[in-house]
Length: 308
Image (cartoon, rainbow, N blue to C red; front, top):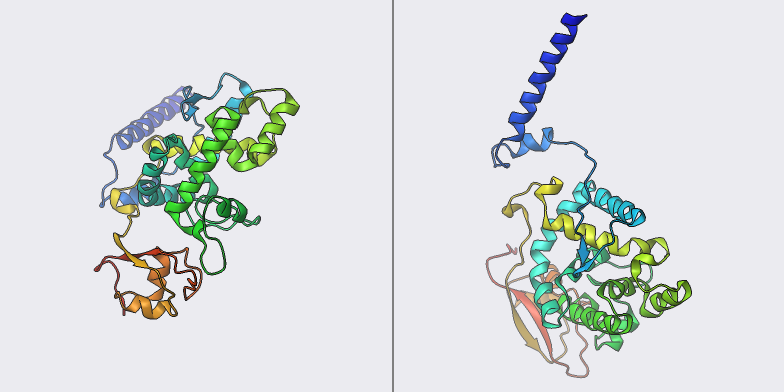
């Protein structure tokens, strides 16, 4: 029996040594990337960092309820690996557009992660009718100066939609007093959050009892912030060349109707599909523009697409 125990102990030591040596290997390279992809899959319990915050406002993680809810979102978003990698890829492409607009309006940089959980950084369409990366409702878009109709829908215009989101968040912050509550109001509305605060006689998000979607909202944002800020810590391995990049464009001013966008695109050496990829706010194959409004259309620079 003792001999068997000694043999097992020796085998265990060899296994641990092998694991230790493997752990010391360099980060993935082109040569070993596929091998690590196949052999590196493990599932671990995660340690919730004790200093998490949203927009500089600390999370009360000593509260066991808050700790468990934060742990849930870290686990869900860490081990939904395909979605996580897509967020890293899209963030490289779209954060450089969103970040300077947030900064211009004095909005904390953390709000870019709100866009991540709202739409996955895609031009999503919600069952309630919200559209675009920032998931703006039709009424909200129009109230904030966006053109929204069947021909042109500027909720799909990332820069203009980010401006509208900033306006909404600033108003919410003034009314509710904190960035955390302003973020919650982006999901549940200022009136809805205000009513819940009053009904429950509390003053901050973490003390509120809310429906599941709004109750998870801030935790999801902070989880994506933590994971996207620390990829290696949460087991995400990629090279810079694996991420998406924006194709450089230049702007063409248009103040007339355009009867045929496929023909219009051909004049710039691209096709209709590529024109729409860079201008998703153009909803039809023509532009009405009866009012002679000035639009700017993004055209990709030459050499980035092979057009037949």
